[in-house]
Image 1: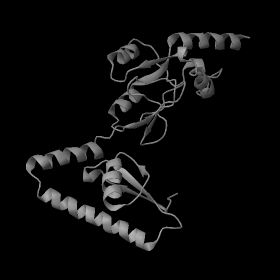
Image 2: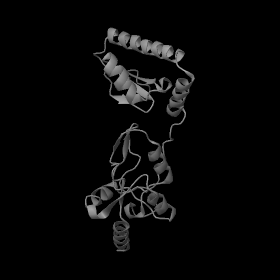
Image 3: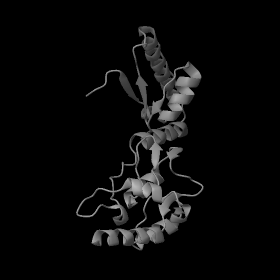
Image 4: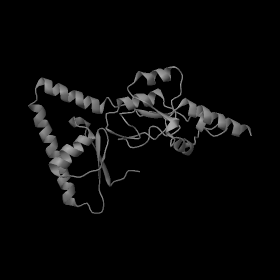
Length: 220
């Protein structure tokens, strides 16, 4: 269903990402307040209090921004135009594909042939810092560990804004696709991730102990 009260505007063609367009253009320059953005879009949400004049003002502002951008490009040098085209390409074409869900680690899987996982158990296991480790995102040790066959398992929810939904949940195995997506992200707000430490993962000892316990319970 299309929600007619919400209007998504693609702004990648301006060379500004969604957050810059929201802050530097709409809010700082024209006093228009919005909350939701993505890497190359902004979302306008109307409600019962939205007036015709406010909608007309928004359209007027967007037209003015487009005219100013056209004038800026008309006067741009060859190098400035090249830099602009590269920014647009990075926002419109070079968009990292959203990774597929990988799977839950065996330690958090229910008995039997099921893909479902126990996020609750993984979430509370991570409360004990001794069960967790940090893997720097840009460190080769992370790639080497995965190449050696080690299963790296997330100990927290990883939620980049945008898009605003988890790409990793507690107990989920980190796949090469998820790793590539995180490295390609150029957003600053990623809940559950600390750039100074890296990805929070379970230690091999914690996973082994939990797997052994689950095996004993299943056997009983």
